Length: 491
Image (cartoon, rainbow, N blue to C red):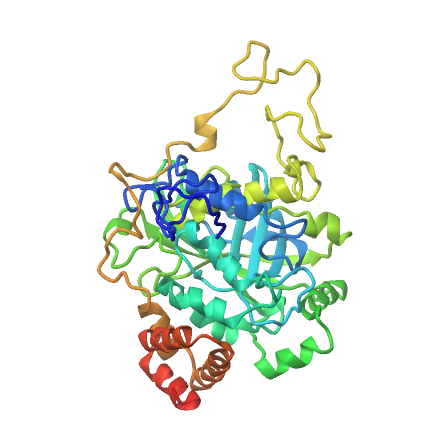
């Protein structure tokens, strides 16, 4: 936090904007009701995200280390009753780009550091680009974009030592109980995948599908590796770091080069629109998963990666994925992290790559572009001089088409603007699903490795208060796991 010595009306520890005015909340965005859209005039959210996006040059502020390849997705099942989107119609094959990455590390960081792995997909559809920006876990650390800059800063480096710091990480996590589910994944086996080819991917957020008649559904995406999900041990990861810091990058490139093309099954979970209001927990909370018993997994196709980039910088480093890229038949949900990312990603691209980043070949849509966007840095695609540069006009310029765009596909909300985590559902809590992951999903061997990892994490924490909260955090997740940690560390 930046402070000055000039007296003002705020208390000494009051958070302020960069212009010095008091901030109402560091945790929650201003929304229309608890499940409504985020309002643009929440100026502190916009300032906070914009400031965060502009912190570093030129690598990505998050997911800096990564690699990717090109391929295509083919839909084999009929889901037209759920969405009109062209790319999800049976028999359709769509060109695509996939990028895999680490979250916290810098551009030169080792591939096999313990971390969540990014799983970003760009589909070059006949209706424009559609981007899905997810991870190799179905959940995330926080549920509101207001906390995203704070979360990432806690995973980066201290200003003085320029070292990553376990105390800082666990201070944030233990003060943010909604992180429990994702942290349990991270400290478990999925924090150390065997390769990018052996990770599952998830859209993580809840999205909206709309069919040709305007009927709406909620949807979650799953991408399961046909190579099988495989992970490595901490000892194996440390050994690899000493011999090859680009292990994942080399593995993916080499596999495609020799013709061993990796494939993933494409599946979805579908929730009827009306179910969301009365479901037992908030279905738009990205820290939660939908149980398959309630909403079964439906396999609808597969995608394959079969072409390496011709130039890494041009086609991977300059690739710009953004959740704002929707196509007709797909839309947003009340997921607050998703709503914040709609702004944040595009703003980050304009800063990192340039105003006209969508003109770069890797980002350029395969569909026709008819836009009134003009000028700006690095503009090199332009209309005929006779084309109008404003709308409306009398000279044959393009016109908006609400039917083609699928407008009117939001969600019902009409209430006061509030700062709150979520509407109350019967089973809204932060530790329940994390505990189920430990007790019901992990094997005995995975629980043993989890405890070993957590004992090491505890030992790296230097603050006694954070150590105490660490034990409380894991007691809330699973008392048995906490007892084993306490026994190992003498707490």
